[in-house]
Image (cartoon, rainbow, N blue to C red; front, side, top):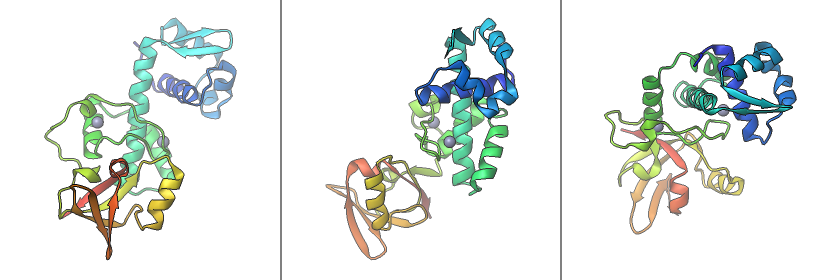
Length: 219
Ligand SMILES: [Zn+2]
Ligand SMILES: [Zn+2]
């Protein structure tokens, strides 16, 4: 299996393209960042190395390519989360740094970052982060700095780091209640209903919603 930065980038773009419902070689090579790294010849070589399969204008990942792409996408999107949540960088520096970061992170470091961030399901753009070994097993030694609101105990306070809901009406509703990144919520009770306190207000929240709110515990 070859591992090279350009090849990895191309594999990542094939992955993202598939998420958007395309597997066209022409469309792939028309992406500016891909054109900088690769041409038809690169793709043929990648096919020769059994990373992708090409048929006419169609390109798909082979089993090996799929594994490399999944790992690279995971590193990229976790790096984005890390840079946003922990270092609060702006969008432009995030993209620049996430891209250089992702090629240097080892498997172990990637899983540690994932754990520290509470195994986030999506990147800041809302795209899914492929799961790692760390997400499947629980009870590691690292304590996450960002975790689901549901993980807090009664009496704990958390500052909202991010909300992963893709349902806009729900985000709007939460926003109108002051439940936005940066605000602090205190867990008032967990049973029978999950009740939080935000400012002077107490609110009962749906279990579904509790799972979408990620917080940094405030000590
Ligand atoms: Zn992203
Ligand atoms: Zn994880």
